Structure formats: structure tokens, C-alpha cells
Image (cartoon, rainbow, N blue to C red):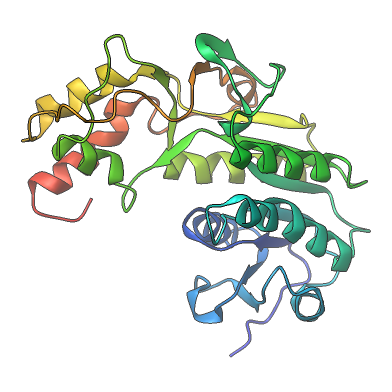
Length: 294
């Protein structure tokens, strides 16, 4: 059954209602009429107007996009983890969506990006003004999508998330428990953000846009404590029964070594529920101890 749209409330379109996009869409239904684009209508959260479509299929996409949305959030993950998959998700899909969307009333486009656009590997601190030089094709395509959003002719804000973790995203904990990580000491700096904080940061910035408050064109969204990989692994090993680290275990990180600075986001009045890895991992560790899925 179709959901009746309230014309007096802001209209928000979320392209990509996966794990993060779905939580963002659900949270925004408290204040806005929200449409969610995903291939399968049944996977779109309840309370969100379903807009089932493939972002690679421009004609079908044109049939489901709501008329003149106030906010557009582009939050995709690649369907395949190769260059073609990243190009489709971060570049081609956005181009298709912008081509079929009436942007005449659009207050802001939010492009969900990643700190993979940074290539620093020297423990340096990075912020929104730091040079971007992705080391891998994935970051290169994400950066290409960022530029497309900024050059789209509509007000745009990039949100660069560091590694997202939380319930249902427990692969790192599983790797530590299995002894698959044997990091060097000192290890590379790693950066992360809990999924609930990632959702809340996006919702916070959307609300600022809807209230007519000023926004920068880029925000780095990462928690308040960059941490060396060996320190994180050692702490987790103190909390849970773990296999001894394997000799062939992974020794370094996959994202270089940098310290993400979130001061610009904090300056907007945003506060973290999980400001560091310990506060974020504790509930997940407790769930494992109690035999629940993390």
C-alpha cells in the first residue's frame, strides 16, 4: 500500500537504502517525508516511501523519483568490488539520478563518501582541507563522485566517513578473535565511526540544511580518537577469548596511516554517542559474551 505524502513536510530522497542509508532514511521520517531508492521494494524500511529502481537504469529511475525534493542523499555501496563496480556506484549512478531529478527546490545534495580519498601513510593529521590522492581505484572513483556532486550546479556537501562499524558489522572483532591480525608495533593509525554516529551525523547536517543554516562543502566524520591498530587489537584481546595471533596474520592496515580530524563536524554542534573505539566496541563485545550476534 502506498504511503500518503504530507506536502507540508520537507521531502527527502535517499538513494541507496542499505545498512547506513536505511537507518538514515528511517531516522528522517520523524521530521520529513522520505523516499528510498533500492532495487527491492521489500528491503526499504517501513515508513519510507518505496522507490524501487536500479540507479543504472535511467528510464525506470525517472518513474519513481519524487517531484522536486528538498534534500537528496546519495548513499551507495558498490555491487561488485572492482573498478567497474565502484564507477557504477559512485559516478554513473549519481549522474543518472541527477539527470532525472527536478532540482529546482533542492536545498542540498549530500554525497556519502569515504576517507579512502586520502592517501597519507605517514601518521599525519588530515582534515577537509588536506590533499586528496587516493592510493587505490576505490578511492579514485569515490573522489570522482565527490567532484561530480560538487560540480552538479546544486548546493552540495560531501560527508567523508571513516571505517563504519557497529552491530552487524563485526568482521574486525571476528578477525581478532580468530588470530587473523598480528599487527606491527607501533601499528598504523586507524580511524572509525560507529554506524549510529554515522547516521546521526548525516541527519544532523540534513536538519541544518532544512533550517537554512550554513554548511561547508565537506565534512570529515570520524570519531574523536584515531588509534593505532596494535593498540585496538590488544584492547580487544583483553576483553574476549582469542586465538593466538597467526604468524601470517595481517600486520598493517588497509587505509594507510593517518589521523582524521573531526573538528569541523564538532563545530556544528554535533556530539558523538561513541567518541572512541572502546565505547563503541563494548556493547558488541558484551553481545558476544552473552552469545548474541554482534
